[in-house]
Image 1 (cartoon, one colour):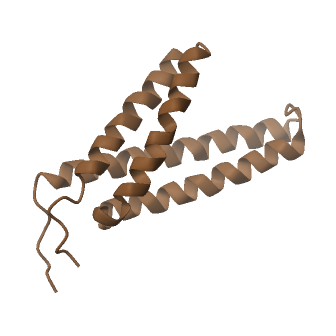
Image 2: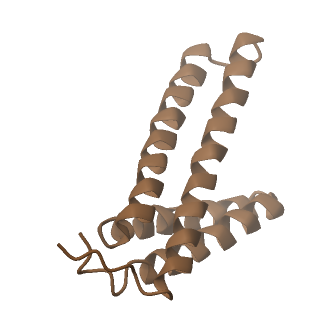
Image 3: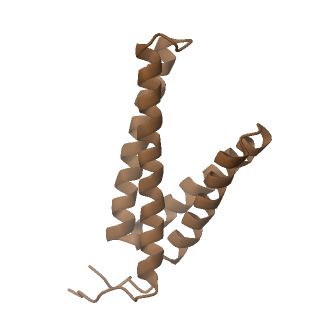
Length: 130
């Protein structure tokens, strides 16, 4: 059993990748809370669609929390899902730019690109860890 610590250069990348993923999970939790409030107040156009959106956001928030934990503990195993997830967010950011939501689009684009780079660098040299 090899208990060697990861190379120091991979630790910041692992921290950034896990941190961005935690932030994404928390953002989905907050957004689902807004949907719940909107539904309870009766302001949602379609109550069932709003509640199903909440369920979907909570599922993704849970999956992202799990991914963040995996990025922190075993980054070599979680790099690909983190890269794929954040690559899928790049077109979402582009759509936000096109709809005039420049600030949200910029935040999403920058954090997604940072997470892609960090996830790609995370876990390098950690292959022997168990």
